[in-house]
Length: 303
Ligand code: CP
Ligand code: NVA
Image 1 (cartoon, protein in one colour):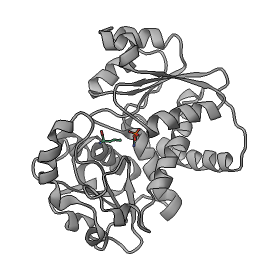
Image 2: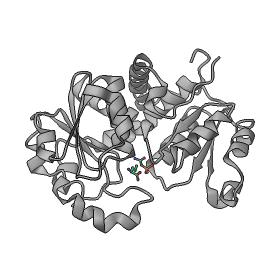
Image 3: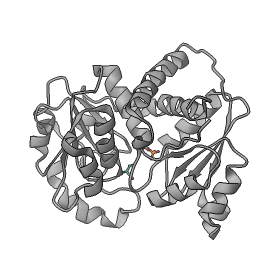
């Protein structure tokens, strides 16, 4: 069995990703029926968090417990990682002890170095560059509420950040059109955009991006690690708050997504995130089901 990692959405092909979304929907139904499904008895997930988390930690930990396995939370504060042990050495040691590892860290390169020295599958649980697990949950939520996302129009309004980069990869892999509206100077990485070709359009006008869209999404203006830029960013992003006037430009049945945590009155108005088009709670719940499907895939003998 070949070792597979999930460092970005590009590590799985389109068929595998679509099958994973269907499996997540199936696992959700099983969970809701109260069906016990424990394919990971005696399996252990290592979870390295170098940044804060609520959803990612709880969804991975709960998912592994529901699968009959166990999860270990590791932070630099109380491991040798925080005292300078090389990432390569940590990868070699941990991957001799656990069956699968997820990492939330800063540089994508650090995650890639870890994966290169790991004997077991490694999952990107957010880096400065990408947040692919979140996209699985987002696509699942859209599919559940509106059917296939293929051929739809998605508007990303806000920072050209890790979530935006994963939406760009998703446009390529799930075959939808992505319109990105961000302030000048806050564009996504040009190499990541170039790879997506004509699947994406870059704009600097939120309403133009939202026009006729089937899905509107946004994220915080200052990501983890950018806290000191908060005030500057608030000024730069002032015209990019997703409010009712922006939602009114989208299709009447458009849905609103936000990976959370959200800041009402900044990137999204309370009326939108708490309004009838918002499916953010289903989206958040789907982290659990989508990541269970992902772990099952990465640990299956056929993958
Ligand atoms: N959306 C998301 O990844 O949330 P957490 O930072 O709480 O894990
Ligand atoms: N862009 C945000 C996403 C949080 C889930 C961050 O990196 O902080």
